Length: 271
Image 1 (tube, rainbow, N blue to C red):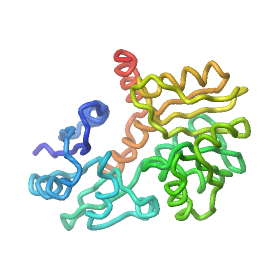
Image 2: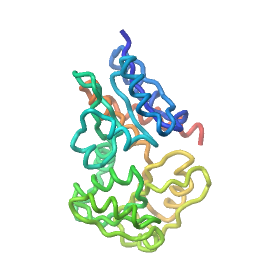
Image 3: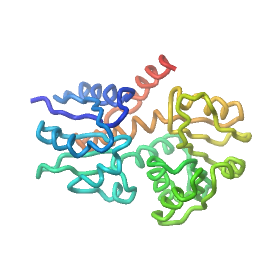
Image 4: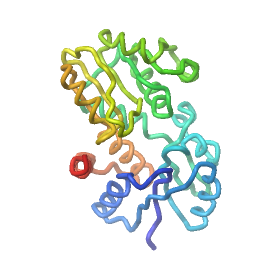
């Protein structure tokens, strides 16, 4: 019997997750189907009840449901609890849902693959949304000297209050003025498809990592490259977090390099 997996979010039509997971399932001879499922905010509980009855075995969770998924889960993994959000649900033997978070390990995989070492380094994290919460924990656990920069200070403070080592906090405007001191900049501020770019100082070969990709990241990454920053986009993190979710479901880590190449071809064709 074909097992059901999928990603829940709103909007969701743009998601590359079905492309990634269905190919991995074919590559590994797994009889399963992965679907994108649009679920409006406030309707996750009903959706999970329906999917449970349909026999769904695993789900990815994206905006705006990551915090709600944590609340609705029957069990919660340690990392998801620390982050306060879940992006992966796994059916348990008892029939409930176990909440996990693979955003943080996905991010760590990408910087380690790029041979970026953050222990003792000055790292600026731009933004304080759900993704920033996961990245702040990852960077703190790796020993970075972290500064969180956000337009609304109170949201940055909420993240800082839950970290084992309290980072420095500043407004986004002040943070952008201070980027010359950063050895790594991680941007979670979404400018969407407006064509606007963050104004950056000269990078002198340091790394600017934008967790967006495609059209949403293109203006800022192009400007960063012009300012002599080494640039990274978020496709690698997208694939890595998917791979670690796949590992939770099937007990194996799939081929990330091939999946990233396929995703990049799709993104470049539409950018």
